[in-house]
Length: 201
Image (cartoon, rainbow, N blue to C red; front, side):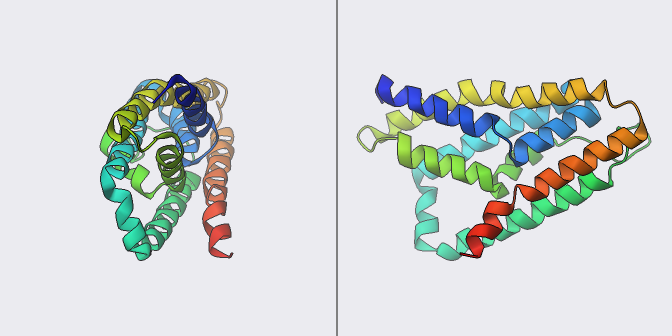
């Protein structure tokens, strides 16, 4: 992959990583409810999960979705159902995590697995490989893609966790936290709009 390809690729990864979506909504909410340090496994799981998807699709997993289109439908609606469940959980959270509560941040493994049902992650993975990984020297180009993603994605999503952590210091009442969590739950549900919009057309 030559430099003219790397720069647009980096811009694509930056745009997809830092723009609003399920991951960033959840990371912001986690920053508010649990703080930066406890959200670190969630952050690392997001980046690692998408990199694993990039590698898997690049090595041939994507052909399964071409041969068996029903897999795409199943994955899409399973992901939508899980996102709605997470939105409901977030809407029900009314205060910061406490020692006596059951609330907790995503673990590393949960964040990795979540990417496989995250519609935006699939858009990013398929778009990056189809557009920015030339077939000539494919595996070398795939490694460059993984490197660019590793460099760009984690700092991008960290911005959202930092924003949540700063908001944590401002949301000092139970009512304010409740309003914030309801707002994040609504944004998480709205992020599913492309799934249902495409299904209707």
